[in-house]
Image (cartoon, rainbow, N blue to C red; front, side):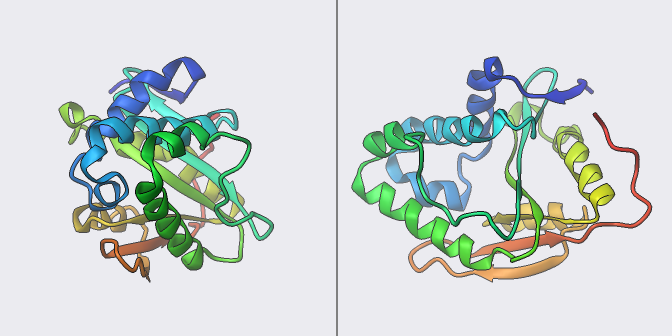
Length: 202
């Protein structure tokens, strides 16, 4: 297994390619990007990476085949609002219809978010060529351990039954339906903090 480390801006191209490959066929990403998946998905993953890498809460394997993009969210966190021009290039490329789908999706997810602090796993992806080798669990681990040490929950959403089962085996057992009017069935999953946590990886 490759060593897990914090991502750096120079990892962007490899990470976005791995994420786009991993989510090909994913119901939510297919809904968001439609027939333009091959063009839009890497750009979308790039925006998500850019928004989070500076916090130090994006983790990758040494070969950059797997990535976990986390962010800490709390009661004062604003709902999804495209800000600071980060989304401008994606919005221009995607067009009005795809942008409406993204807005619909994000607003539905916002409605399921708790009002208490939590760690949000926005992206967990492993390149298809390296799946089944434990990489996803490895890149999740640093922030899960940190959340346990802090005594706060971890949360995410998924639209794939297989992914839901993967997360439930890792403690994401509290489930809330996310209602996306024209989108796929989606679930908000919560993992409560565990007592007696492992030491935090720094």
